[in-house]
Length: 338
Ligand SMILES: [Zn+2]
Image 1 (cartoon, rainbow, N blue to C red):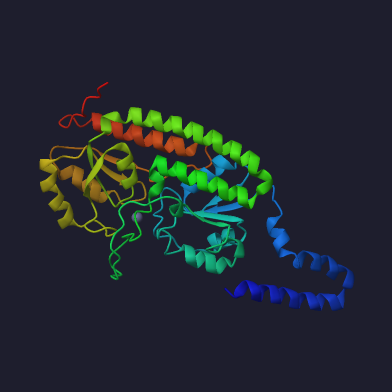
Image 2: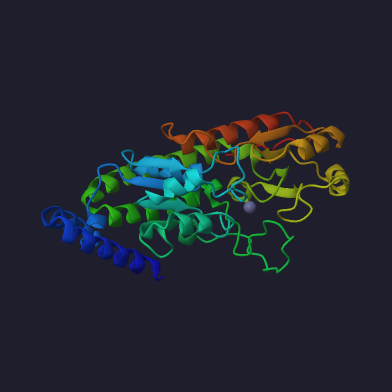
């Protein structure tokens, strides 16, 4: 990478001009300009954090509520397909830390943002660039394909890892370490906040498992691998994908073909994410027998700034699925024993 060097040279070049013009002021500017490393380690009261998806905004706010956190996408947007627009570039330019999922989900827009923002603190490999997917193992790696029309296939594994409460706890552990590296003066407070979060999260996971027992062993139809980690965690199985191939939009012929399997093993519900077009799912529940509900779930937290936003998201997903399961009388849940 040569551009930070260029920037520094440019800075010194400007400096020489100023030196000739006004020596005293120049000394002041020089003190600032010649100490970029110092400036980076100087701790801000309110660090600027740019997050690619709302779940990471919510997690950063859990660990560091004083941070000024920006999220580039909402629960109503498809994180695979975002435009690298000027407002996002401006936010990334001033970021001290960028938190994204990685594993290819943002490959269509994040590199463009990093390049155009030209912020050395948040380039790949810098301490200020954190990828959640690098801290956990991913499920379902696929053989890479060179076909540009293959859709969002995620050859490195499924990047939608935030829907797994267990992996989320692992990410939180890695994230707090990164925050401590970036802001060492706040390390004790960060450790305390993380310990509180981790304890509460463990007890929430236990209660979710308990509540979700009727869902164990149930099957669902869904669109894309958006909730794959969540089904796994719940002990559910996605037996139908509304996408004919990973990342490709549903087609009438593919939906038609799903009706056959439906009769043999009706899923408990058809689940689509809030950012996905619900028409395919709607068609399926209108044509399949026995009837099953269409459940629209946000694929991430809706309001990251709401206290404990991640917990609310999982709570609401379990509520919606339990409601759907109780509305599916011909596929009773296995009785909870013991
Ligand atoms: Zn995906």
